[in-house]
Image (cartoon, rainbow, N blue to C red; front, side, top):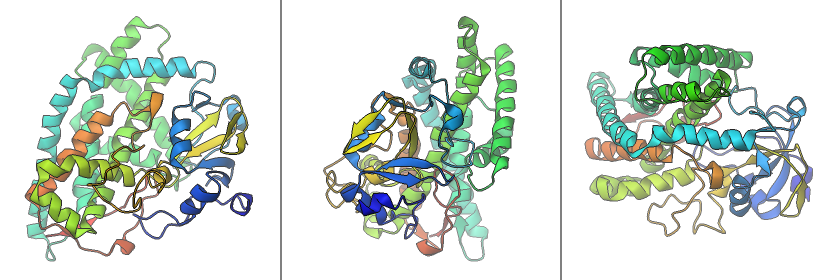
Length: 403
C-alpha cells in the first residue's frame, strides 16, 4: 500500500493546534496499522482507527517493557515515555501492584478533599487573572501561565505530598522531563526528579501525611521487594498523566470553546448543566500530543491485515481514534451534545487511567468557573499564531485572552 510503503515520519504536520494532520484520515481508511518512523528515527507501527486502538489498549500481548530493551525502538529524546520501561518478566504483576498501591490516592475521601482544594486554587488563579487584566494596558492576560499550567502543578503536588514552597522547582522538572527538544537536559531532569522524590520519601518516613508518597513509604515497610526505583517510576507516571496531560486539556479545551462562540455561550448560560458533557468532548478531541501512547509487542500479533512482530514498537494514536468517523457522527466537530459519549481519552481496559476521576474534577471545576466568572472571555490572538509546546502532550506555550 502506497501510504504504508512511504513510512512517514512522526509527528505529522498539522494545520493548527486543534486540527489533526490530514494524513490520519487517510491512514484510518487505507492503513489503520501502518509502518512509520518515530521522531527519534526508529521504526514503529502507528495505529489510527478506533477499533484497533481500543483493542490494543486492553491487549495483554502489548506492554511498556521490551524483551530486549537495548534493541527497542525509541520514540523521542524526552525522559518520559521515550522508550521501554519496567521489567519484561514481571510487568503484569508490577502493574497490578502499582494500581493496588495507588488506589488509596484516588479514594472518594481524597477526591472530596481535593475537589474543595481545586475550587480554591481555580478561584485564586481567576482572582489573579482579574487583577492582571485590570493592570495590563491592553487588558490581555495569559491563561496558560495564569491557570492552565500552575493549577495541575499545584494539584499533583498536593496529591503526591510535595511542599508548596517547592512547586516551582517541581513544575520545572516536569516541563524538562517531557520536553523532546532539549536532548540530554531532559534526562538530567529525570535524574534530578529521582533524587528529589527519594529525599521526599525519606522525609515522609518520619512525617507521613495523607498523600501518595506517604502511602508508598508505608507500602515499602510491608513489602521488602518494593524499591525506590519503582516508586520513582510510579511518580513519573502520575506526574506525566496527572499534570502534563491536564495542562494540555485546559489549554485546548479553552481554544475549542473560544473558537466556537455558540458553544461558549451555551456553557456560560448553564455552567452546572453543561460542564460534564463539555469536559467529555474536550477529553475526546483534546487528547495529548501528536505521538500517541507507546507500547511494545511481547509476542507476534496479527491484526487488521498486518503482523506486528515480537519486540516491535506500537504507537496508539488516541487522537486519531477519537476522531474516527466510523464511530462518531461529524467526528471532527466539537459537539458536547453528540449522542456518542464514549472515548479513549482515559485509555481502555486494564490501562484505563487510574486518575480519571481527578482529571474530571479539575476540568469540570476549571470550565464551570471560567464560564461563571469570565463569561465574556475571548481569544486575544489568532489560533494560527499560537506556538505549540515541544512536549509529548503538546498544547500551547501561551494562551492570550481578554474580556
